[in-house]
Image (tube, rainbow over all chains, first blue to last red; front, side, top):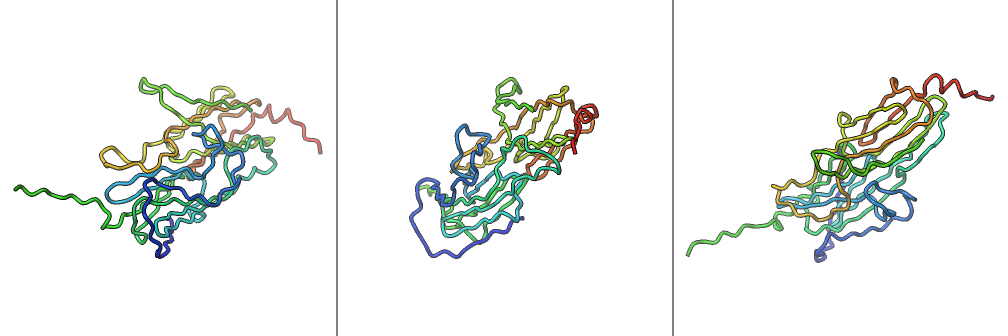
Length: 151
Length: 126
């Protein structure tokens, strides 16, 4: 289980209509690295898939070989920040490098969340190199069913 | 060592996208070591098949993410999820009987020893 750090929030800004990306620190930390699903140079790391349902927002990222201890997940207001690092693989004794395609280095990615979340209840799991962050929505923002009473 | 991509595979009668994992490859006098990123793959979902000096790696990825009955709304779709496939061709004759592999946290490590004859061809100069 990962530790999720939460920071008390005071900022309150209107929720953007899209899942906005606030990448701040990313400058050639993965030089020449190509994600298996892209044909060009990948500009942000990690790529994320995200979705929401009535209860929570979910953010998933592929981080193979990362150690949970080297991942730092924090929620501050409507921003989710994922930080992490992965060391380059070490050649076995006496071995030469034939090919090096896997990323090594550190990253920081911040995502603006489209709905307010209960930062105290955020949880994360890490299975087979896939990170999944669950961000429960605040009860007051969950969809509400309005029953129409018969006249 | 040569590598080639398999971008598609034939399964259940229709074409399914597969993905080419990024790899690090090392070579020593005794063995090749291949390290591949295959996130979402459990050890039992990895298949390694040798055909002479060609190694076929295929890894099945269980579907994940919202299911249809979840009534979930997509917020970001930056990468597709699918199986991994990649083929490696070795120049040296290899000892496939003694190849071994581990898969931890979505990282596969394959060690392929060189055959006795391939090892003997190399004469170390002190």
